[in-house]
Length: 382
Image (cartoon, rainbow, N blue to C red; front, top):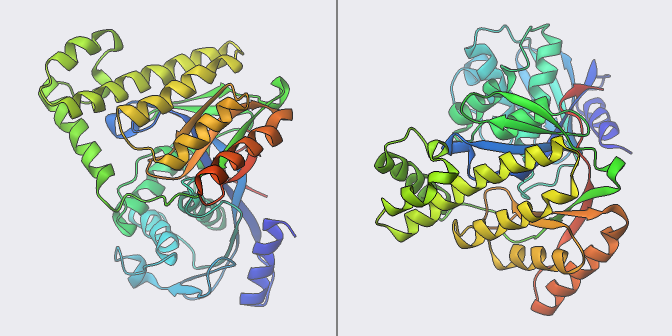
């Protein structure tokens, strides 16, 4: 059975009828551009083939949802949908979307929803945003809501920021909703302008190997917040709205104005990472996909040495992939665990995976898991 079959089966089991339709939204991986989003810089994600499916139909007094991934279904009415935080757990992501739509003035019909997904949980591939984007797409269609595509990521972001209480940026929602097949999404995190950048890996005989380090992926120790605060304070000292405004050719002069060596490292990462995104975009526009490899590897070194957000497992996975012939490799996501992306020739996936497996076994790490991915389409009705 496919994940779409799972969602439809879950709907029939829970509600005893057929869903009106199936709506899908993908997970995402960020090709390059880490911790640049809240510095109003640039990111370059693409959508994954793995998707969350919402099987849905109108009906009932309020909203209800079940999931093949969770034991307990949830249901809530207008009161809970109007009170941020009233529904917690996984159901809060569903209720948050309803709240954001209603808060924006849309009439959201009562609905029954069943969820299934093959986006890996806890791996930094944005499973929560895939859920929210699938639900938003379903409710918009069921209610006949005319919501411009550029407005949809903002609604999902608001649902998570306000209802769920997670201070996420705009990248993940934009990727899940706005990506197109065989393209990466060049996103300006200040203006929200997007551009579809050619990224047809299959035509070039390439693939992205995603390696889940299976190291704990969390920011509970406050390290993520500490880095954001450091960046914001550096921008204040430098007299710019955000670190995005520090030009690469003015980096040395900017660093000389900062007394704190840690802050200097953080700034160096953000400024050079923004430039790496811009350089990657130019190479992809020219069809020179293999040549982005060194930029990916340089991004990882910057995250490791200047932003200090990697862990041993991801560092080992990156080096093992490079040793086995990857054109470039880097950690992707917020850090402190999560996944690595490696740009490889398609026929070398097994060899690279074996290299990572051997390196992990030598160090006694929990085995990594890996799969290949190409740039896929964003949210849609199936």
